[in-house]
Image (cartoon, rainbow, N blue to C red):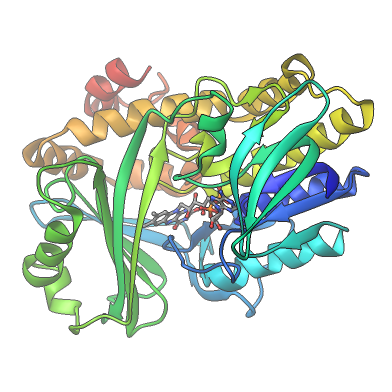
Length: 399
Ligand SMILES: Cc1cc2nc3c(=O)[nH]c(=O)nc-3n(C[C@H](O)[C@H](O)[C@H](O)COP(=O)(O)OP(=O)(O)OC[C@H]3O[C@@H](n4cnc5c(N)ncnc54)[C@H](O)[C@@H]3O)c2cc1C
């Protein structure tokens, strides 16, 4: 088997890269180790409206389960900061159906797909890449002009290509469970001790069922399951709304902080495998899709030129960093700053943000894909001294 471009991993990022490579004239093969697309799910499925449109799909009942317009942020002390976006800002989706739609779009663009096909070895060269693949238990050799590693947080292609590891991994856990939402247009966020170093969440699918989860740094002393049990049984807000039991359990890693290099001879790494994830929210579909489009296009062109050198493929590295590098860098600083606050500091911060002026500003400029836009507005010299005081320590750390 010989293709211009082989994409390893048929998640949303791999299928988008495959589609863009096919649309740019390449013969493309998409490899997926599982027997079924979009399963197992390792996601809350909260996608910003921008993330959905970045994947070139229109929101539809096929995968959208609920519209979300804002967030209630609960401080550890129990106070609530209501952020109302005023219109639909995000969708709670079925990731299984969403991923399937994206794979269907890739195959419609001309990409071939092989399920139950796991890439287990890789030899690279300036023009030909050789992948060792286990397909339904049988060994196969597949050659490609360019290989795109879109194999997720546990992906091995980056290591096989000598590109190392992402900076940090969070350990995520979530149940889908009976939960009476206060308002099912709003997600709920719980920073601080409910999930030290990140946050816990509830994302409503309707007024009776929510996805309830959290993430903490991998390797923490108390495992994520311990925090989830505590959230469900004794958080003063969650335990009152939670109806008991669970309909689904999700476990997964969230990679933060991109690889130092995402390109080597014959290979590009994209999506979770490259750490192209928003450090403020753990969301990787929007950022991954932005990068996948560039990777697919560059891979197709490089393969058609017969030049898979890292110098040629570096166009991908340059272009994705131009688009997202700064935002991911600021996001990482916000993540580290927020994760380092103790409960008392978080209580103070959220209380001082609960003013009409700040809430208006968040409504106008809050953007889950680009938090730096709001930060810039909040810290602008035209704002009141009081607002600047609230964010002074933050500004010192982040800027
Ligand atoms: C608990 C949790 C909640 C999350 N919530 C959100 C959210 O609400 N919104 C959001 O945007 N993001 C969220 N994320 C992150 C999101 O799930 C990922 O960013 C997104 O799935 C990345 O897509 P991807 O295509 O890069 O990787 P993946 O979706 O992980 O896909 C990688 C694919 O590669 C396959 N694969 C791996 N190795 C091989 C191999 N050797 N050969 C063949 N196939 C292989 C895998 O089977 C998989 O199908 C969450 C993550 C977690 C863990």
